Amino acid sequence: MLNVEIDPGSGFCGGVIRAITCAEQTLSDIGKLYSLGDIVHNEEELARLKKQGLVTINQLSQVPEGETVLIRAHGEPPSTYEEAARRCLSVIDCSCPVVLLLQRNIREAYARLHSDGRHGQVLIFGRVGHAEVLGLLGQVDGDALVIEDVAMLESALAKGTVDLSQPIEIFSQTTKSPREYSDICDFLTARGAHLTVHDTVCAQVASRHQKLTAFAAAHDVILFVSGKQSSNGKVLSNLCRRVNTHTYLVGGVGDLDASWFRDSQSVGVCGATSTPKWLLEEVAEAVRNLII
Image (cartoon, rainbow, N blue to C red; front, side, top):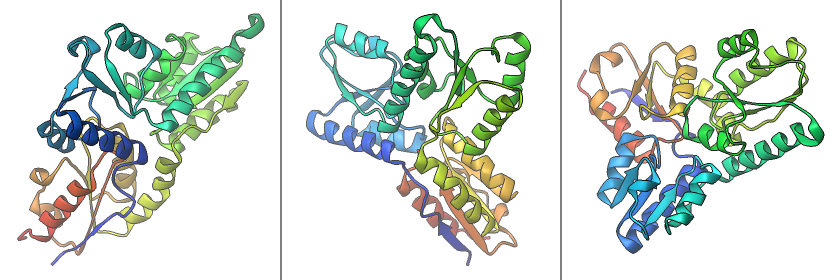
C-alpha cells in the first residue's frame, strides 16, 4: 500500500477561513447570500457553498436592491462600496486584514509620491486582472503599474512606462512568490532605481514556501490540489514541480491517474490557500484505495 501523507500546512489561509465561516453563518440565518466574485478559487468548495444558497455574481447590478452581498477576502476598490450604498445593499465585508493593510499602504505611498508637486510611481507585482490587484489599483484610481515578471518589467523600461529617474514604491500581491518578488526588486535596484520596497507578501503564504519545498522533496509523487483559477495554486504547484518533477496538479479525485503511482512508495498531498482540508483528505483517501 502507498504511504500517503497530507501536508499539515496546506488548506485555507486565515482570510479565506474567515470569509467562508461568515458566509456559512449568514446563509444559516437568511438562506441566501450574494458573493461578488468567487469567494474562493476552488470549484469543489464553490459547489458545496452553492448548495447552501450562495449565489456568485460578477457585478453588483446583478444583486436585487435590499439584498445582502459579501465582499470576499481579496478586497474591493472604493467604487464597489459606493455603488453598494447607492443601491441600498447590505454589505458583509470579509476583506482579509492583510489585504486591507496593503490597500492603505498603497494609498499612503501614492500620496507621498505626489505631494508638494512631486512625481513618483507605484508598482504592483501581481497578476494582471486578479481580483486583489484590481482592488489595489482602485485605491489610486488606476494610477499604478502592474508587473507580472522580470520580462514584463524589462518591456516597461524599454517603453518608458517605468521611469527610473523618479522615486518608485513597490508592493506585492499578498499571495505571490517571495522569491519572484525579490528578483523584481533586485532587478530594479541593479539598474539604479530610487526604490522603496514594501514587504507585503502574506506571512502565512511566505512561510509555506520553505516548508512546502521540504515536503515535496520528501515524497516520490506530489499531488497538488487546487482550483484552476487560484493564483496561489499556480505559484505553489510550480514550486513543488521545481523540487519534484513528479508533481501533478489536480482539481479533485476525478483527475487522478493510477499510472502516476507505479513504482512509487510515498505520495504527498498538498494544496493552495484556497484548497479546503476536506478536499485534501478526499484525494488522499482515494489514492490509498487505488488498485495499481
